[in-house]
Length: 259
Ligand SMILES: Cc1cc2nc3c(=O)[nH]c(=O)nc-3n(C[C@H](O)[C@H](O)[C@H](O)COP(=O)(O)OP(=O)(O)OC[C@H]3O[C@@H](n4cnc5c(N)ncnc54)[C@H](O)[C@@H]3O)c2cc1C
Image (cartoon, rainbow, N blue to C red; front, side, top):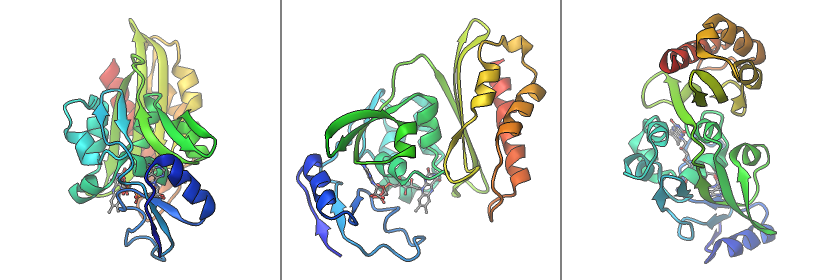
């Protein structure tokens, strides 16, 4: 294993081009996790010292740890909640927001919250720096995440994690971003995690809800839309049916909260 130490992000990207199999490492919690089978033994490009860890309400440096975000006075409420949902303090102390997003896990507590807030990422790529949405990054990850940008979009974002214990990763994750004009849903984004290999947006349910007055919305109608467009996996954490019941519970909670 070789440890490569670039002095800036552009150099790190060049090193990666010259060593395509090498992996970036930031907090190291995922890449060196004992859960990785077989353990990773290839070359690593250490980006932990070249990334920013600043935190402001609308921009977070990729090297900010999950605990730094959780405890910062400048963190927006939904991001405090999302990072608090990562129950294990050791992981929060080491793991970075950039590493969490780049890992692209469906069980991430961060990714659904960021998609529901319409967040974008500033990314260093071979061809230079660009801003892309979190959704686009997840479907086609490339380069180094430098910053997470949360727009001042007027959306309220609610996050909900269902897990076996507070220390566990989620069985089902839900994040909902919404904007009301009086009682009308002017904007709505619904993102669920742990239903399959990647987080998913419940677009049909969003379309169904968009423009509706809260008083017109019946929970049964939303559930018909939502349960019709998802097909959760069954695995060692939960069955498909149980996950569906959690989607139902999460949407019911959401409706109670906004009504
Ligand atoms: C025991 C355990 C429990 C966990 N529980 C939860 C949980 O409840 N909820 C949750 O959301 N997550 C959970 N996680 C995941 C955890 O949040 C991530 O492991 C952590 O955030 C990864 O950050 P890191 O800096 O350690 O990444 P690393 O391990 O350094 O890197 C992870 C991956 O991301 C890439 N990478 C890292 N930084 C960047 C960057 N800036 N740009 C591009 N690529 C990058 C690396 O190449 C690697 O592929 C858990 C992990 C463990 C091991």
